[in-house]
Length: 311
Image (cartoon, rainbow, N blue to C red; front, side, top):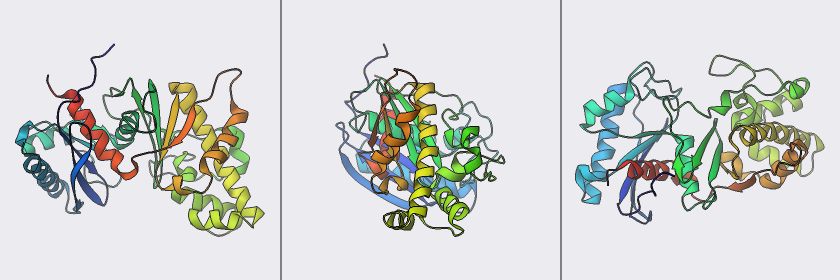
């Protein structure tokens, strides 16, 4: 058994996204004390490092702890913690040793966590997965990503690539009903191409002849059988990804986050699609909506940094 997670220190988290860098300061009990959001700069890696440094220094000053404050950062993409090149579609870090560049600019190590891993960890500690030994998080928004927390801790990773499930291929048994679309990763048929928010609009265009935003599609589904059929097909695809998480990682609960969780009746729709896929007598994981929402990225990164702090 790993040592019990630390709970005696304030901590800070940074959530680095394509449009904003959010800093959040938490008390020892993980109550939010303060937050600050700035836009993500578009001027390349040096500008990004300056913005991260600005947010870090704000956290250090606001806490009164200075460089002793545990601070972590969550971000999308694949980051090689061993010094290899990074990849993130919406950030100017491609081909760079991001951990090394941060260490050189900041003068301190900044623990990094994939944003979906940060989400899962946050929900495992006081959120929708609190008390479960294995908590999976699935973010369904602009993209698709998953994370896993085990015994209240982030899943150890080398390149932050584990559970990049948006880039798994969807199963052949759904092939006749789905368009084979190119993905931003360079391949075709990835879950993300149809399961994300933009992907659901593409699926609507394939079936209805016109791209429909997810929220409008949900409204139409109440009186339009064709729109309802699109949502049913989308739920069938989502259930296949939930089944993959279930069989590969054996979570007791899968917590859902991201913009698509605002679709009416989402949990019931997904549970109904997942039930027929059950493997023999194996119990299916509980599905739940996230408690902390947009705060989960910074919150999970802060928890991770505090867990790594020396006793």
